[in-house]
Length: 330
Ligand code: HH2
Image (cartoon, rainbow, N blue to C red):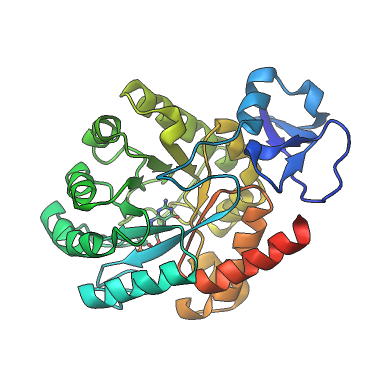
């Protein structure tokens, strides 16, 4: 049985309401009980097994010194020639550093730096080339904010940590490079485990699931166990359902409507939906650069479900929206 907390942010809480993940704004007093046969209805908090309730309510530890008690912003910095929305714009290290500064000034809590596009159809980048792209930028910006390295490769992760990065962001959740779990364990760096079905090159060809929500949940639970078995501390693991990675529009929407389920994994939840294709489709915005309003709508919907880290391109705009959201929810 799975339990999806029904999240509220109303300042008045009923008796028996409990905080979601120890956060300030979101609480719940009921959850939807789910099995693979379907929804089993809504149950009060008292009927949620103690171990599950503990995971749903326990405060999360800080990630690279950033407290996880409210939604935090991870600013995207793609040092690539071919990323789907900003490919080439920050390939020049000087442009990348200027962009990082602007994002920190705009309110980014963490900077996520990547040297390999993982958009659908993207070409593989060898580790040496990826290192050459990201290391100079990490060295230049590591003093501004905690840096996360967006890579599937342990060699790149190692070089990035040596250059001053503090967080590993693995969109393959340890499936691409077997050395990644060991690197996280030995370095003590927090690691984001993201669900993807298939490889970027082919992942959008024919994604299919028995039950997208529960399949993604079970996969993340399994990869948390793999990481913990390799010596990674559970409180240093972040989970991410991987919007757009081997998912149709309906798959993405099902995950987004049910994000709060992932809190039962007991780890901070990260969401990367910014400017992605489904926002263009539903928001009628073919140009990825025109997708900030839709991206912000999704960020607020995720914040309302207690998501702790929002990975976004448009930092200043999202920060403003979150400030206003908080002002009327607390
Ligand atoms: N999405 C992208 C890359 N890295 N990491 C996490 N944890 N979650 C995500 O959703 C995620 C990610 C793809 O987006 P982007 O970096 O904007 O583009 P590209 O892969 O083309 O560089």
